[in-house]
Amino acid sequence: MRLVSKVVEWDRDSVRCRASSHQQSDNPLRVNNLLSAICALEYAAQAFALHGLLVADEFGETAPDNSRIFVALVNELNLHAERLDERRGELTIDGQVIFRQPGSTVYRFEVHDTARLLVNGQVGLIS
Image 1 (cartoon, rainbow, N blue to C red):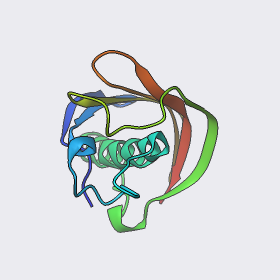
Image 2 (image 1 turned 30 degrees about the horizontal axis):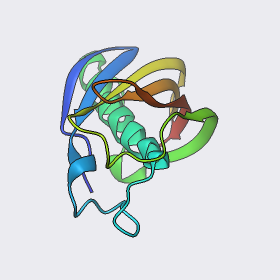
Image 3 (image 1 turned 45 degrees about the vertical axis):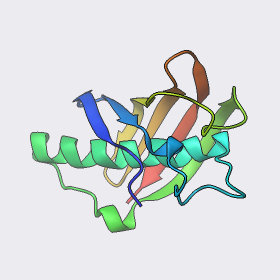
Image 4 (image 1 turned 30 degrees about the vertical axis):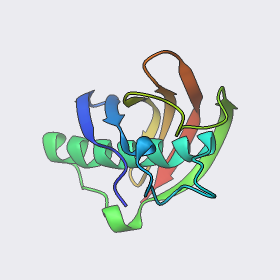
């Protein structure tokens, strides 16, 4: 399941991705044809898994095994919308590393549509 369309920009400690899969009727996260805003966590996790691979490649670090990356922490989660599927245009997923050690990274993140903030919080990944 690939939700993120593209990485727009990134550096060692931040990433910006875009996605349009929230508008697809066959999005695998839809329940009763609705895509809850809580699904933004999966969009963020996928963006940060991509970021981990990019950072590892660029800086000669050990790349995480993408098949074995898990969300281990969700903190300070704020839902500013009920649904993602009602949003027009692309979603933007912004992440900033706030903690990193081998095998785990914590990001502060925001998910926006073209007009407003939809979801923000912190997510930690382990590999």
